Length: 121
Image (cartoon, rainbow, N blue to C red; front, side, top):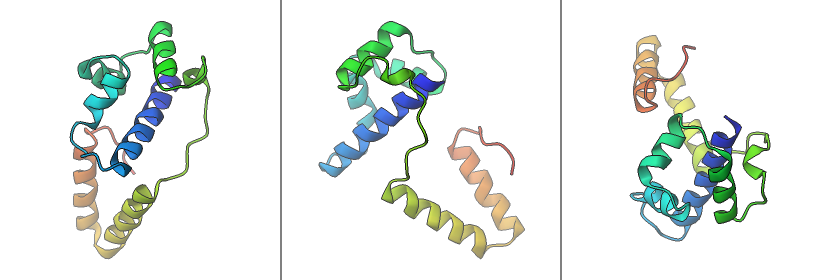
């Protein structure tokens, strides 16, 4: 779990750098997988449930210029990016602007987009 979360942090950093450099959002995951010297399919599996073994963890750390063991360290959640904060502000505005039926519909859309893994609130 810790390795996966940290790998996702590395992906987020990669994506933010690429987007800031003018890259298209399409293909970011494939480019990240290429940078890690793994297949896009393996990256997809890692994101969802595939464990990251020791050999792969060290490979990821080396290719992302992190010290050995970096993926194994628990980290406090990073602060939100400006884009994430804008999204949360907009979501809260939408939530507050609607009634119970609208809130259920909004939540259902978000759950569907997240792959149906959200817990009920």
